Amino acid sequence: MLTLNFSTFKLECGTDEAGRGCLAGPVTAAAVIFNENFSNTILNDSKQLTEIKRDFLRPIIETESLSFAVAHVFQEEIDTINILNASILAMHKSIDQLLPVPEFIIVDGNKFKPYKNIPFETIIKGDGKFMSIAAASVLAKTYRDDYMNKIHEEYPMYNWKQNKGYPTKEHREAIKKYGITKYHRKTFRLLPEQLKFDL
Image 1 (cartoon, one colour):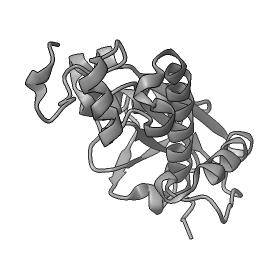
Image 2: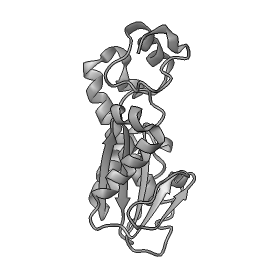
Image 3: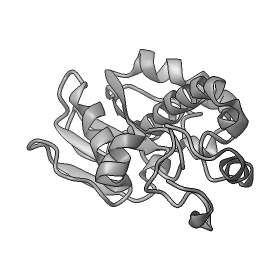
């Protein structure tokens, strides 16, 4: 069972990202504030949930949260500022959109940069411990999956509908065969033997 809050602040937001290890597409983050009455027995870290459960939970999170927001940081920016900075930027961009403004931020993982003057805490495996982080992980994952499904129509040979841009064997084989697209992250090790194609 997940815990609702980490701090004693009323307006505590949780934030998490999805797509950090992908070879293509954006890194996507979400931020969620729940009121003190929220409870849900299904909610968990998105990686522990089936796609059906994530899709079931998304409208519940959106309807029952006090505030939620989602933000993408795209591959061009990832290549410019690196994936860690891009992940944190996506979290900041999602928090930017929250109303009311949170008084405290809890972050999945162990890396974050101060956001304005709001106190924060990084929590390793926080998406399996706190409801707002778990909810953020579900939103980040489902919104990113929607985006990857959309660009799959443009480049079906990479099967992003299935692998969502992660470095599966099938995705790497397609890169070998067809080269890279405008959606690929050029600073990532797209193939184990990078020299096989020109960037």
